[in-house]
Image (cartoon, rainbow, N blue to C red):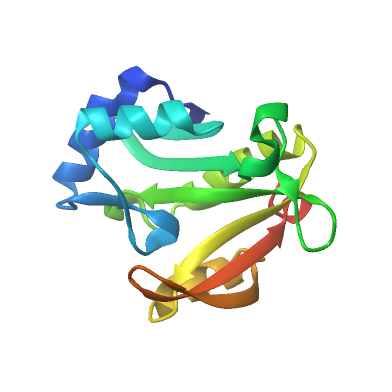
Length: 169
């Protein structure tokens, strides 16, 4: 298995992998639907995000992570200032094929995102987790994310969690 930068032409292979896992969408932060897995939907998401990474196994894609700097400074190539004055980026999507859960795929993808965002001066990675998803909350907590706050989102209450990028590397 290896992680590499995702390319727009990965869209069909990723769509197929997600569909074979019997999932209809790639979820944001292992929670709410982020994008449809049509080739066009995946291609568009990967093209718009600053950092998109694909984990490949022998049979094709087994994981994907997509992150983007906050909008305020996206044109400058770094995230917007966070609550502590440091730069922030948002983890938009993190998906691991269910057959590869527990194999460290998410760890490698998070480490790759962290290394890439750090190169752009980002010190904090932020994710949004459905408040009613204890599995996602536990996952992020186990990976060094801490609770920053709660907000009302389109799918209900969401917890905002943050992690120091250096701790994820």
